[in-house]
Figure 1 (cartoon, rainbow, N blue to C red):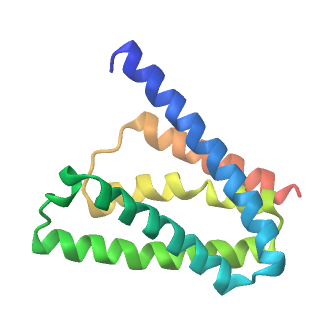
Figure 2 (figure 1 turned 180 degrees about the horizontal axis):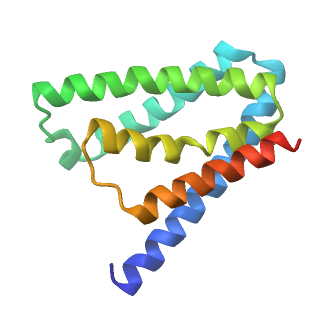
Length: 145
């Protein structure tokens, strides 16, 4: 990765993390009044409407062809995303925002493990050590609360 691409990737990752944190706090506050299902519905409906708008506005995206196998995988990903949103909102409604964020940050660790098992990706020793250290750190912080 070139210096410019690495800088752009780091910048976008930082923006993503900040937006995610703001979403977490807004969701925690919204759950106080809206409730679990309403909050989950809004979390699904708003992105769907925005993505629909992007597709409608761009002739290029309307020409994307998705094969039958991909439709099934993307459909399953959508179902799993709904499940993750509902479980996320349930956790957020029943735990502190900080604890929920820490537990949610175990997601990359599980993604790494599942990529190795389900996609047969080769996991480097550094990645495995990093995942173990990250998971251990999260457990240590949660256990110390």
